[in-house]
Amino acid sequence: MSGSPIHSLLEEAGARYGERDGRRLPLHFGDPSREYGAFKTGAAMFDRSHLARIEHGGSDALDLLHRLSTNDLLDMAHGHSRRTIITTGDARIIDVLTVVRRPSQPLLLLAGSGQAGRVLEWLDRYTFGEDSTPRDVTAETAQVTVAGPKAAEVLSTAARLPEVELAAGAHARVTIAGHPVEVVRTDELAGPTLELIVSSALAAEIWRALAHAGATPAGILAYDAHRVAHGLPGYGIELDDRVNPHEANLLPLVSFTKGCYIGQEVVARLDTYDKVRMRLVGVRSDAPLSYGSTLMSDGHAVGEIRTVAGHGLFEGNAALAYARRGFWDPGTVLDLQGGGKATVCAWPLE
Image 1: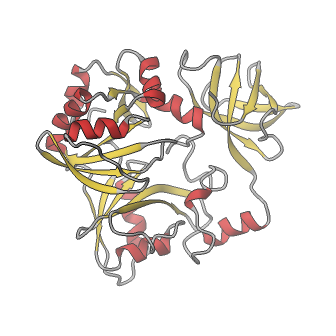
Image 2: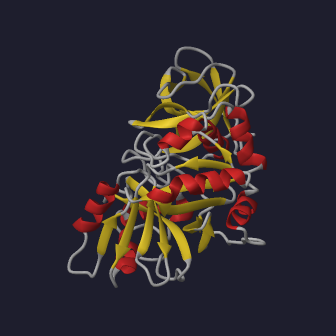
Image 3: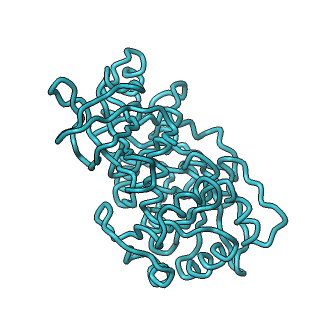
């Protein structure tokens, strides 16, 4: 990611780069299998500074987000965070946000897409006289994610604290290498997941301190394999304005009791009348899998492969895919475009 504040440091650490979603991102640091294993038994660390970060000030900021997104935000206490989805009027996904309610400061919005402009445009479109002042802080900050069962241990060591215990959704401030760092525990990666937000000028020092504390630098190959194993959709691959929260298995981020928000009627109707037409699934195959290839049944297209786990990280081949109603149950065997079979599997895939 040539725009990352720690690009040079990552290259020094052995990062091998590739293209992803129009960006140059680290694929791996020399050993994708070790990096993937850190998600399961240690603490994987990766740079997500390319994602968008927005400060949202004003007395009406939280209420506005509550009225415009899928989750219930009004009962969120200071020092906590909650994930929510912003959708179009027909419930298509614009982005998934982590809303952090910081004490005595503007809200912090951690976006999934790296498109701050799109989120800011959406907020502006539905602001009518409210006291709401969003500001893009992506360029002046960096975001380092630490995930895995030893994430808290790494943070404690780096911050030189006896023990850092953060409940899921909690926000805290710590000092690492003599510098202030914001920490948000989101658990969005199917286990302990810590987002560290720091001034971009200090990012390299924080990265070094975390690596010294035991975090394993990881790239996109390990990250994607972990997502495939646990059914975690990624923005621009599984999440975009072609799908809705039902289809992407994001209903834990949807409140069905809070009342109106943009897209609420469609989300509710799909739930009430059971009209979901496709669903995100995991598939495994002995044959090669490739992004965008079609899943078939009796000669008819019934699904599409999306994220593919890197070769050698799984036994066999595995991917995330969308499958139509009637073909998404675990155990369903489908034909692969170009030959071979793929089986829909329950998560986790390993």
